[in-house]
Amino acid sequence: MGRNSKGEWTLSWTPPQYSVDDDGKRIGYTNENTPNNWGRWGHEDERGTTNFITPDLVKEAAGLISSGKTISCAVPVEAGGPVHPSRPGVVHHFGYSGADSVVGSRLQSIAPGFQGADDYIFMPLQGSTQWDGLPHIFHDDVMYNGYWMGNVEGMGGAAKCGIQNQKDTLTSRGVLLDLPRHQGIERSEPGVPITPAMLDECAQAQGVEIRRGDILLIRTGHVPWYYSLADKSEFWAAGAPGLSDATVEWIHSKEIAALAVDNIAVEVEPAENPESQLYPVHVRLIRDLGLTIGEVWWLEDVATECIAEDRWEFFLSAAPMNVSGGAGSLINPIAVF
Ligand code: UVW
Image (cartoon, rainbow, N blue to C red):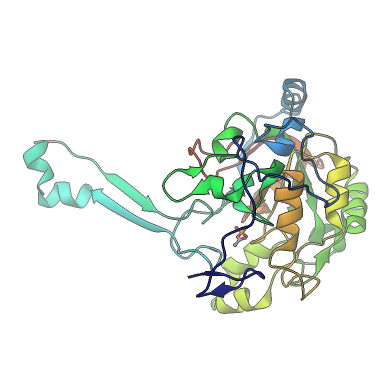
């Protein structure tokens, strides 16, 4: 099986008409898309916009801590959560357990008298509150900074731009824009594109400024809606509120380090242009800008604290797991007030 010139599945196949150099880059390929950050942090950069986070900015963000109250922005990791339909859900099993210790199991022959529990999770790294890393999205067979998508392979994972490149970062000033609260509605409606004007108005009303190196959180109320529904098929059929294509320039001009939304795919679903490729905003944010994006975040509790304290900025620690060659990561982001 293969693909045709339009990228559609087909039984026939023609090998790509290009070569790849020793740096892992597609030779002769230039990214004509604007805006883009290719080369901005050097020919060999594998981190993208998290380069905006400097030690000085982290120290400054730590200055936002006053009460020390900590709030998780993660949904529960469990079967039945809002996992993108392209992925299987969470499977959580125990190897041995309290029940085995009561009844007695083969464990007792290996470890007589030992009592305890041990468990295993099988799940997509992007199957819960997550970062989409830079090797998650390609276009023209190329990922961020010109690296060939063949650098991401089955056994070795991402030889370029793997999520482990972000293991020491994604800790910065967090800023929450609470769109439904600002608009006086319960939640943003599926299919409604979030525009730069909506983000600017919300920031202005909240009295908060978005700065270089920030991790921007955008609340829509969409993931909470999932949990409120008895029939989850309604959720998947409805699409999602999310970023419009026009926000790409806005995000680029703000020089933010990363952004996360409490929806499934950050961008609006269905896409604004039905003729476009799938997930067009992913391509522009992840591949062109080198922006790490967060999905399925839980922003209800952090929003409640922001309202109570009447402040929309906080210290945010959201490092990914140190997964060698990972395309993304499960996370438990912590906002500190
Ligand atoms: C896909 O792009 C398929 O998934 P996600 O929404 O996790 O980026």
